[in-house]
Length: 306
Image (cartoon, rainbow, N blue to C red; front, side):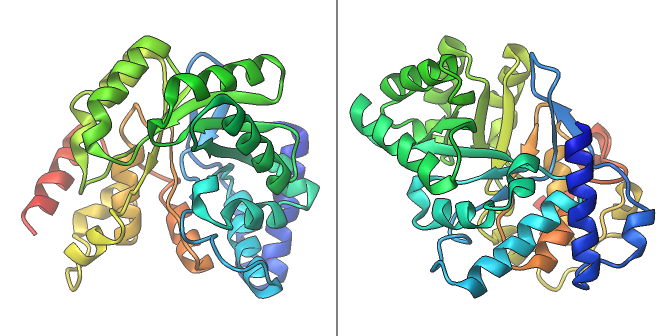
């Protein structure tokens, strides 16, 4: 973490305290979020990030921008960095660009977006438009969204990396039906990042993809951590078990997220939200003790009984 990032983060914390979003004690009790190294590099990423699907696809009016600015400030203020978006998400890239107009926010963020179209020309046009909307001439991570026209788009991404316009490359899916094809692409192309769905409700990535990522040295981003809210519906009216205190989970959201980020192959999870209080709760999963292998097994077996 650079001195510039540390200064920026503290400034954001001070603004959140002044706005009454965080208590003043947070400045004195500040502790680092758990981080994971991007394989093959010395760069680390905090384990809790932010997704923007649906939640940032809103009108670009000042009220909506202010709410999402608060969410991003919480992420940065508590040590998070990675924000994931896509041209597939309607207004999300434009909204994120509006939020990141402040240079401190942009410099403190790791921005991931995607290309989702067919053909080289269309892909270049779409990636260029993403840069315009995000207000930047360099994007940290560009991913081929849902494997669409993978060979063509991935070739362009790698060329843009060589030109310095992109830092990392990747590929995404949120469908188990694509896991076999994704595994083949991972072996053949060794992308820097793979984004996939993985959770207590969708554990299938544990079987092949997560071990494969560890073997090949590929960073893993996790989407759909709550399975579009299905996990919360599963535990509705069920109290958090007392043994969750062993890994410092204080809510169901933290229980679900700590299960994900405690897997050694996972680099970062990207829950989306429209509510600052939910962002703050999600961020809590990046601190304190994490479940070990035995505890993870206990968590999975316990959820399976509900």
